[in-house]
Length: 280
Image 1 (cartoon, rainbow, N blue to C red):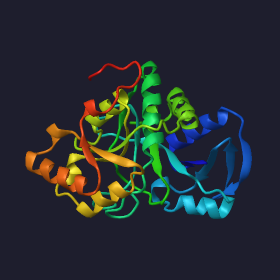
Image 2 (image 1 turned 135 degrees about the vertical axis):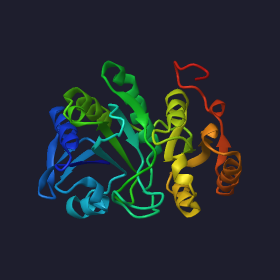
Image 3 (image 1 turned 90 degrees about the vertical axis):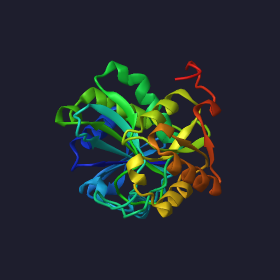
């Protein structure tokens, strides 16, 4: 069962939630946090009153209130970028250092590599019809929970948050996404939007779990990186954006991940997706 979490404190979240309900086929599944919960096949939809970033343990709270233990949690949310670039994004959650926006310092939440990467690909396939880019974002912000989780977002400003067609696209993706069963990797290096990792995910058979940006490695918190490995289910590989990392740091990171059972991989190590070119 997938738990889909919306929040009335987030206008884009409400927009996506309403587009989910527009699809139809939902039945009432009880009450959670003062609002109706809805179920449609293997999706359970709940709405929070407080902003979702700051409500920890939603998975446990839903299980206690509704008797459902989710396998995956997906939050529908707004996205804000300093650049103002409108984008549709997905990302894992957690904090490499401080916890300025919810969650716990130095703690990452279990990732959902297959569902999250499949969501990215589905968005990218449809997004050219809309004035939005498509991208991963690196692991960041709260809340804290113990179930594999990812965020799916629309931004960057109020016009984008109210964009009905973009919200409808993300709603369809939330209902359709699944685990493609690809090899799983942790992605390391690059900026907040980890562009190289995004390109590889859209061209190759690899699902990414936690995504570590270069700025989170200044300095690296190896305890947090260990948790990122442990909380990327099925991880066998690590993919580095090599040009975004100094050679000494890259050597240290390769040794670190090998010691934890992850083999450094390059793009060519993963099979191309059907219909995609052999190289990017």
